[in-house]
Structure formats: C-alpha cells, structure tokens
Length: 354
Ligand code: NAD
Ligand code: UDP
Image (cartoon, rainbow, N blue to C red; front, side, top):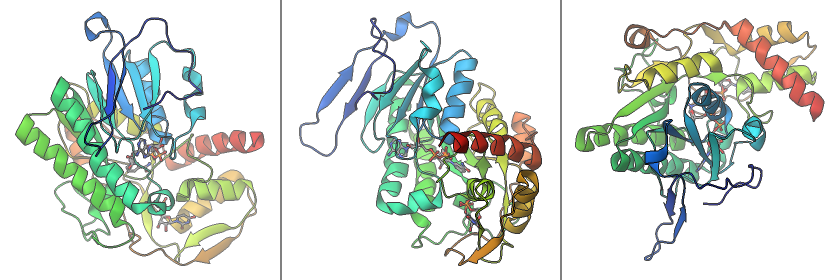
C-alpha cells in the first residue's frame, strides 16, 4: 500500500490506522500507517474502495458533504487522480493507493466496496484479475466489517441477472448468466461477492447493504471508458461515427449518477435494509434511441456504423424498483435528456482541455 504521489502532503498529526498484508507469503509483510486514534475522532470514518472511479468519486463527494471523514482506497486501474483533485485541501479526505486483491485493515464505521472495473472493455481486458478483484475485494471489505463492526456496502450489479428471461427484473429473480462466457468474470464475480456478503451477514452478523446497480452514467466517466453513453457522446462531439453493436435494438435503462448516489446513501443509512435492492432508472431505451437522443442534444453530424454484437450481450434490461420505492422512499428524478445534457457538458469541457 503506497500513498498516491498526487495527494496533499502528509498531515502532521497521524490520523488513522490502515494495515495491509500481502498474500500468499508465509511471513506476511505488514505496513502500518498510524493515524489519529478512533476515540479522538468526532466524525464517522467511511472507507470507499474504488473511490477514484466514476461512481466512487461522486460517493466521496456526498460522504464529505454529509459530514463523514473519507478514506479512499484505489489502485487507479480505471480511476483517475483528476476525479479527486478537488479534495487536495480537504482535511477530512485521505487517499491510499492499494489493490483490494491484497488484504487491508482500517478502523472505520462504514466500508463502501466499489473497487472493480465496470466497463466490459476494461473488465474483459484482464478477466482473471477482474474475478479476483470482485471476490477477494468483497472478502477483504467484509473482514474489515467483521473486525470493526462496520456497515459494509457492496456495489453489485444488474449483471447478476445476466441476459434476463424476466422483464423487468425483480430482486427475487435468480438470473440467467452464462458462467463460462466472456462476461462471466464480472457477472459471476459479482454473484460470488453477493454470496460472501450474505454468508457474512448470517455467520458473523455483519451489517451488510447490497445494491444491484443498473447502467449509470454522468460526469467523470472516462472518455475511453468503452461504455455506450460515453462512447456515443465522445463520438458525437468528435463528429465520428457512432459504433452501434448489433442492430441497436437491445435495451438498457440509464440512471444519472446523482440519483444513484441518493439511493446508495438511503440504503446505507440506519433506516436502510440489507438488500439486495435494485437501484436504477426504469425508463428503457434501445441503443438506437439513445443514439438519436445524443445526436439531437449535441447537434452532431455523426452517422452510424454497425458492429458485431459482443457475445452474451443482454438483449434487454430494466429494473423493477418497487422495493427501493417502498423501503427507501427512493426514485430517480433526473430524466435521460437532462442527464445527457449534463454529461455532454462535462465531456465538452474535458475534450476541449485534451
Ligand atoms: P470505474 O471503473 O469508474 O470505477 C472503478 C474503480 O475501482 C476505479 O477507480 C478503479 O481504479 C478501481 N479499481 C479497480 N480494480 C481495483 C482493485 N483491484 N483495487 C483497487 N481499486 C480498483 O467504474 P464505476 O462505473 O464507477 O463502477 C463502480 C462500481 O459500481 C463497480 O464495482 C461496478 O461494478 C459497480 N457498478 C457500476 C455500474 C455502472 O453503470 N457504472 C453498474 C453496476 C455496478
Ligand atoms: N454498445 C454499443 N456501442 C458502443 C458501446 C456499447 O452499441 O459503443 C451497446 C452494448 O453492446 C450494449 C449496450 O450498448 O448492448 C450497453 O453497453 P455498455 O457497455 O454501456 O453496458 P453493459 O453492456 O454492461 O450494460
């Protein structure tokens, strides 16, 4: 575990304890960051794995705004220092560069486990690492929860439903996943992570919160992220052809990131529930319709090129959010048009700098 060179200078008064072990050496190497003892802390401490990523950095923002101290842990595989730049002078924010495949320890009140590449392009680039990240990352987050009595949140996914035969998808649906396909490293990794979460809840009484997140988009996605919303916007702004996989008739339901963060905060509040809970926007669009909207909102002259549909690409996806509505009082508020406009504004600024 090493400090990221971009972070602000080390504080004069050490703040928390973070310990890490490397596996599998017989004699584990221990490196300890001594920080301010927990008893002197007046604000709750939340650990966010994957906090330098798209959703993770927005979650860090909300936790800081809600009065938490935040410890962000990331290996920067798909995360970006730019997403955390605004915390440079924030005394309640700390950053640790660490890989969740390796154990770690921190005396925290909450763990938000988001570390895992989410774009098919990135998670398929090193599938074995993706699987390890999902399973071992969940295990190590849960161990922190068990040791310190912390509440542990898992960023699970609609991918646990695979190419669903039930539509819309309810939490009670067990899914339709190809366990040996190219998406399995992610889908089965996330399913295995859910298994660990519920076994820790049963066996160790760990306070777990599991969200099944449906396609989420917004500012801070990487321009080369590879997911459809960022691809279409970047292509539109560059007047390059839209890459439509298959005939574009497959559907997804897109949730703006601020709405998702509202849902995560409600789920992880004292009034929340273990889950799993679907968090997503139930408005469903084909990829052809999404292309039309991005074209109209950007005023781009891009045309479409059709490429082969990747194998096991789900044909349709829409969350049933009745559970989140009933138990959390949560519903998304941002329309696709409004969310796309905000995201287009972000990519315009990023692309004009680049
Ligand atoms: P992202 O790729 O932007 O963020 C993932 C973060 O995890 C990055 O900062 C990356 O560097 C970090 N990371 C990856 N592997 C790591 C490792 N081994 N150790 C430490 N850090 C590591 O993706 P995102 O869209 O922000 O997704 C965040 C979480 O939400 C993921 O767990 C993802 O599976 C889940 N999720 C996202 C969506 C979505 O539509 N965005 C949907 C369902 C679930
Ligand atoms: N997609 C597309 N063009 C792209 C990227 C993706 O048509 O440039 C399609 C992809 O095949 C899938 C949908 O858009 O059907 C959503 O893909 P994404 O990678 O965003 O998310 P996921 O497949 O994980 O839901």
